Image (cartoon, rainbow over all chains, first blue to last red; front, side, top):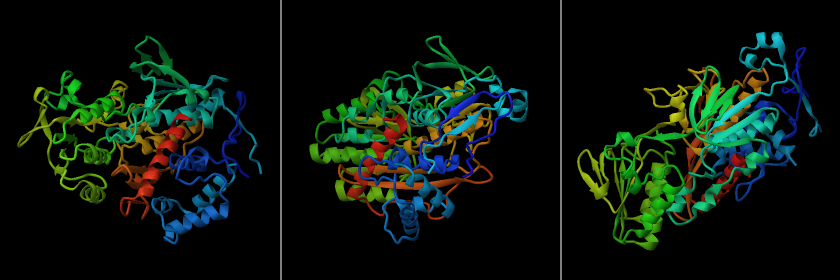
Length: 103
Length: 421
């Protein structure tokens, strides 16, 4: 998979090792930031403390279906319909993949 | 599959790299660790520090904060209502230290943005490649005559959680049954739009149980309740009928602290407990750095990177910025991450994300068992403006007990997320 965080170094560059394995595939920085922005409600790494559900480890298909059901209203929501309507299909797929990879 | 795969980041350096990447030129020395200095350890600054270390451990992150402890403004109204204690919302910075952030307890007294240096009261100086200012708000006591240093000893604002919150709670406890509590609310924009109305709800909740003959006066500088209006009015009618009097367009002109009296345009109001939240603007450190707009009172930034529109390499996050988004802890946390993500890209010679997505979720307590919320998602347009997709904003249908539980969970999660608890 193409990884946006891998960049080819120019000559003379110092070499650093940076682990981006914080939250699994796909390690693209846009999805990483979007996923991080879920965590102020759903907990760091999607692991919630308290009544708000965790997102970590949710099966990908389930995550996508819930977001679509929040969007349509098929799944009644207290808060999540507004949030679900803020993302497009591709972003929901990527977020689902991201959270599914967190153990 | 590649969960544990490591990505090798090579830092471009040397003449070729520096020439092709303008914002990267400051890091042209091969092997130099990029330095980010963050001023202010609230929701914005602490989050930014934590995520910078998480996303690019080689960046040297220094967080300068005046206080030993983080005291959460969200939930501080529940302390006034006697539901929680101040220590329940007070945390140390050890999580951030463990995450690799260099914590410095000091007060910033100046900047040299040309040489990229921060000067502290202790005499210490800190050099940076990128500076992040997350000072929050500055309270404009000077805009209300009589709200001087002496008056500030007896009249609380309690709009920065901490000792002010504790004192206001003591004043409410000492107030006799049948007394009057008055809250003066500044004109928008101010920190936490629903906050004053939540405060009214929490104080009313306390009075209802402990001193039911008491009255609450809401002296709002605005023409109407600015946030969650229908929900607050419904809650006040349901839980506290007859206790709360709301007066719009009640801008204060003068305080007489000795008489516990606030002078409005048309009348003087005396209260047993007078709580005056003055107007506010971006924190004084932003003026010190030359990034606060004198007319606007806040800081204009490029929302892709949160970089100042007037000073390169200076980024501003949280309540200090001029934005259509509310000045909330949730937003400061989100802006801290968008800024951290942009800095990681910029400091590695790449471009910042073009279309960041940010969200806000603000819960407000309406009683000791119920709460309401407002939520929204913003996406950055090609023109650099925040836009809310259709349907991606709104408030609760009605107050509910489940939202009280969500609010508590939100608090635990945002504290853990912000402070690496």
